[in-house]
Length: 213
Image (cartoon, rainbow, N blue to C red):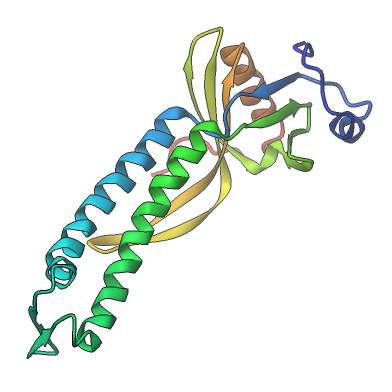
């Protein structure tokens, strides 16, 4: 078994005498692909909302008037009359901050460490910054994504838990929670171990695979 990782004392105590299928230190909290997706979305969002900032507030900074409609009523704002533009400016500012927040989180996630993971026959234990989370294998759905090579790769383990996400132009969508084990060696061997343990601990009743007529 893969136990060549030196574990923090608290984690070793938590695992105790349980057999260790594997123990690894994840280089990152999530795959780079996911971080880059967040950065791209945050950049596009910020750029799009910035257009409104320059178009709407730019003239004010230049000492000019801004003409717009508020509740269908023609309104004029100027450096000497900022009242009409306060609420629209706050509204636009919130959207800009959301974009900056996503961009910042994406950049931060690139450098965020993933912590330690220990797999035992009954559970997956995650240790990060002094916090320990223990997840029974039965909590995973068995939907696993893996990529990389033998030297370094990523595993994404979908869980049975999740949340409904509303969409503007479509029905609500269920998004499962995911545990990422990113930037680790022996990724394909560890993926096989995870798959085996999930299947062994699966409490879902078996199905026949066909319907009677």
